[in-house]
Length: 278
Image 1 (cartoon, rainbow, N blue to C red):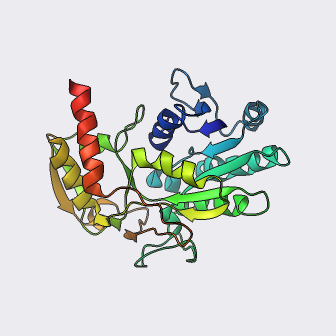
Image 2 (cartoon, one colour; image 1 turned 135 degrees about the horizontal axis):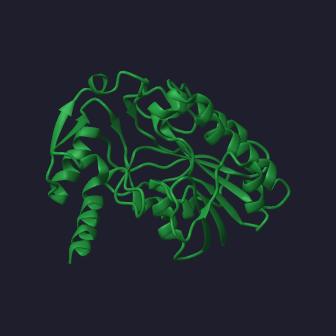
């Protein structure tokens, strides 16, 4: 397949680019931070985005945008431009071309008061980021055969923007005991998308195990023997704004694919870390 991967320089996008490039022809994009081998494109430059699509692609994976909750809350217009308007531009550009769009969305479309969320549950975002993802989904979910895949917290290493591992950089790492999810091990995401991208509509993909942020971070630090102390905190003690959902457990009623449990993921992660140091 010929794939356009928007956001290939990001945390999730970088891992997708590394995996998918081994099997497909992938054109990846970056924005402000140039990465060798990637095409620099600002999602707000609609002409440049459409010109890139003129190359012809079987699939466009949209893994770009403004994902930081606080930044989106502080700059709602920018969040809309990157997270919503870019999807609208893509949709218009690929109409009648046969190109399929796969949009990565978020569990933040929910308010976190439910025990489990499936594709059938109504959305109720509590922050700007969640509202932009809802708007992006609405733009894409209609005629055209496109696909939205919602994912939760993602953990693991990424080649260029290792956002998750950077959280362990200091001597103390704070992690919430009251934030619960079914996190996805990053290397498992590309194979899962390859299994799902022939479908259309809305799908969830999450990890097997349900854990708190504190449990996950503690187990990562222990497995990798990181020189940091993971300290338990309450969510409201760390983040006063914007509102952050506290329980986001995604499950699907349309497929049985799940990412590995935390133990299996950490064994793989520790193995990769050992290989990097030898």
